Length: 634
Image (cartoon, rainbow, N blue to C red; front, side, top):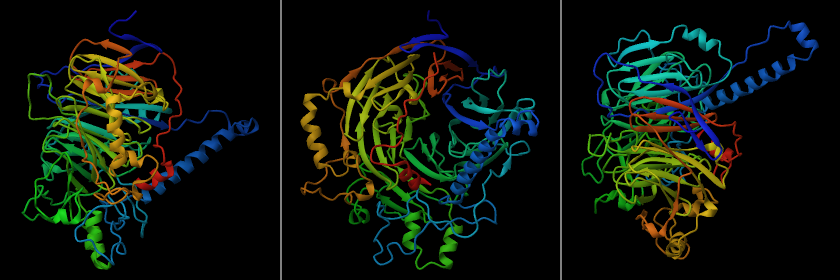
């Protein structure tokens, strides 16, 4: 029978086995303008050796497993070292380290471009990597010790008693959970039923978003980026109690951070969206540079190069017309940007070395919308308006695209490698508030102020379904990877109606409306920019942007208005769970269950009814091998 701590799904009963309640404060708590967000990571700790004597273990053959484990560890260490040696676009904090030259002196030397237009034909983009030169790069660590810091930005640190010994004694897989509440950032262990968190850090500003780098996570280090209401960023390693600061004091952008994501498989690069409608790319190993983003079509020269990313060279140099955020994004490239450096590095030699040493943050600057790029800053209720606006973004599984939502009610699909807008979809009503990409890359789901969850097929360039079940704004949503197999998909959503909803859908069961069939066919046949053309081939072989297709038909606009209700299939919930307490703010799926959070910092871990075996879903979209993906972002 259901109660506050259980619910019944088609696969069985989910039950709460662990809760993390907000810590009572002696002073009145500030309004929850920045709701609680969740980040998780699973770390594998080495298994301790048994106490059996070595000679007897050898007689029994027990040492074989140990040898195999050591070989696996060596191979894993070698792969990690190889990945770290091929880090792109980074400058070390220490004098002894060197970073590879982001420019290619030979590329485009015969015919230099009139303006630094970004195309896939150029070998160096923000996510590519040149061949390492010279001394091998060592693993970087944050500069400052959290325990001995005198910074006023960090006001308090509390750690669990015997934390170091506790970490050393761990064996096997451990799932760490990170979340923010008010001005605090917490680190705890999921499923361990700890009485107190492993660590609690109090800042002078409000943490608004955070993300863990899964590619560098190990038992010896964790790389976490925390965004703040002041625009500041903190690179934090909880295992070693060290931290570094980026965009210090809002030197690059003082707009509140709304979402932060590491570039998958990159040890150094991450993206941050801000409440002013921008997305900025950072390298954790770089210092902050002197940077002023140029306004779209501004006549005032700035110490950086600005590019209307979807315009031709002639359009870029012209100021005719007004920038339309529904049709393009506006990219400001600092002098150290790979494309800019490639264009101005000249013949090499001393100039290249100076350019290499001068590489700073940001790596690149995207103006996506005139209004907020939504995400982690959300209104607390319908009748309360704050300065923070909606914004969020997420990478596609192959790391080629970014799905971004904003306060203007649009879902934008951005080609991250070329830094160009691919498509822009309008919401049914109001702003979009959350976004997720399916594990196989076929679908994007969004939640919004229209109380709907919308399912998009970027490859077919259309809305395929809307999910009805919420009676208020949708706060967050996520796919349940182990219940997605390429035919059926499971995802969950939470909203300000305090509903936790599970949804199942099958792409084959969703019938395309007759009214849209002819329109979609005409669209996919004529648009050279549509992702429909990229299903079975790399974007490297697409025709130049703005060029007509094989039939000479110019491409259609990138903006797609929302279809009416009778044109789109409706998906009903599999389960609706009403919860008590504060408004729900986040949801995350783990192999053992799911985690929910409300805006006041009340965390619940719901364990699955049975151990669910993954359905071997391919994470790379059709036409892209895993090797290709690694080459793109290694």
